[in-house]
Image 1 (cartoon, one colour):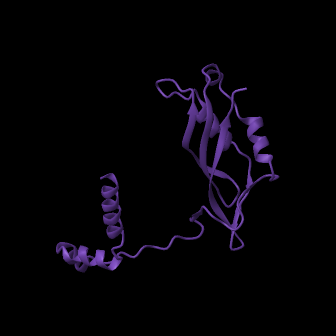
Image 2 (cartoon, one colour):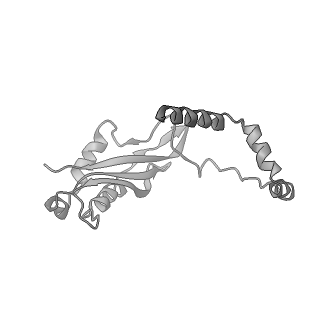
Image 3 (tube, helix red, strand yellow):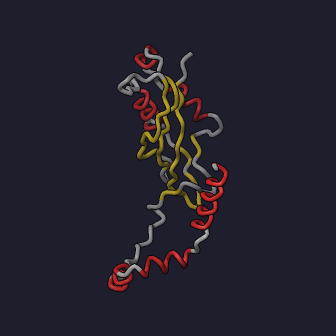
Length: 166
């Protein structure tokens, strides 16, 4: 019986996914008020984003921290502070920081996007790990900016900052 139910479920799923886009659009337009709204509304033309304001995630040449190579890892190791309260409470893991490297190589708008930490208390207190990760990125020296079409551009980056107990 389970096999028969599975076959029926899979068959109906395939039929549902097999509908063409044009058929779906026709069904939406046949509902009535939608097509009237489409005729009455004017199309709003989006203003093009100026290249100077555009923030890229993928570029031909990524931004590079100062000397490149493992210099960024050395900078993090030298400047990252592991709060004593976090050590005392055995809190460890990674904090992911997202930031933009602008056309001058400055780090701007750093934010915490994810914390994957272990050993947190019932209040999910990270004992300052998030703020310390944010501080080390905020105080980062200049980077070599990213390049797209032979022009320096703003690039959004995300880096993991690891906190390990020894």
